[in-house]
Length: 138
Image (cartoon, rainbow, N blue to C red; front, top):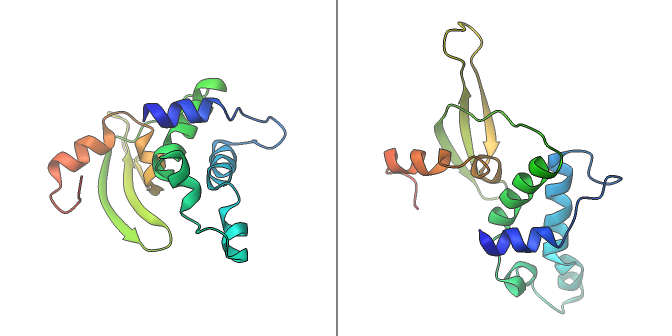
């Protein structure tokens, strides 16, 4: 994660392009890919080489981008109480079904599917889920 954080800090937030955390994350992933899809269509390099060239995992970079964006914009993202389950998709990657809950406030709980990079921005959340779930690889 330290390498991803260092790489993220070289790709600052552009206020004109990055209106939200998701916009910034998508732009950073395109930069990481480095136009590899264009080169792949010309047959000069494979798509995965953009991330491999830097030695970075795109999911880790996306999580680092989310953390960096919230820190720079001074936004407080509400942490899910826990992860209930997960599913994997060949195109979308792994998603987690998260629960947000406030103790003492009945009927205000809500559940949403969130991407792996979204869940990774909250320290300990994914790690705790992996500890109690044997169906997910580390």
